[in-house]
Length: 132
Length: 132
DNA sequence: GCTTGACCTTCGAGCCGCTCTAAGGTCTAC
DNA sequence: GTAGACCTTAGAGCGGCTCGAAGGTCAAGC
Image (cartoon, rainbow over all chains, first blue to last red; front, side, top):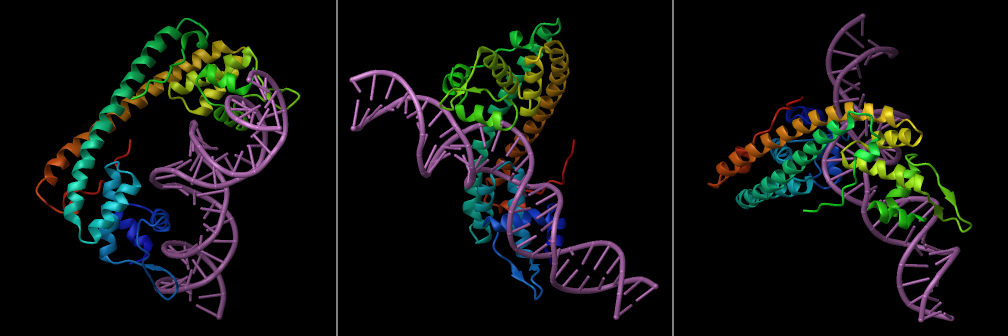
């Protein structure tokens, strides 16, 4: 199948697929006589896994590495590594949620203070960096 | 004062200040004879507000617009507009938290399924886009 | 045989908000 | 006269696409 079909089947775009290929995250596919990229079901599987992993919020690098490994028959290792990544990721998500909630708290407070025509600068203070 | 001092006072970097200037988000400051940028307390106020607004997760464009307005004496309008922006922003934060929680739920579920050596692709499904 | 329209190609810029490097100039203190 | 801290500009790089320009290829319909 050609790139547009592959894109449609996996809910992505031809642009993105070429982007992945250019950055070495997908193998270079065969070409037909006129230079069009030609894909097989194997490619569908590999790109499908890559996209699914991306949707889990893994980085493109992680996703492409794991999907590559799996395509080369090391799916078992991938499962193991993915389990670890998921644990890490959940920790990260928890931290992000906490941050967003703190910001929300601050915004709510601020909206109250702003009501009576004070200058913004007097109301909004600069945070000194609060690192993890 | 010079750019390094300004940066330190506001907890940012000279690089970032030049970046803001290049992109028209800060006025071009006076220069000393040797070409060094020269800043005043007015600049401290303006950049301080810009940074504070950024820390509220406003876009750089919004932050620079509001800090510019305020520096030109329209702080009252800024307060009004900011209040509206904060409401919007809180809605956005709520949506983001919800998304993160949904993802977390998915990861937790997935980690369970992955335990017994199944192929990742059989466990992880592709989400069809779930738009706002 | 000509046109239309859908597909494909490559190359390269643009998005956001910085962050950093390279390659140099300038100033102060010793 | 030199070390070290500061400053200057121009430009690349990050992640992860997204889009546009400018053109080639193909099948269907007239």
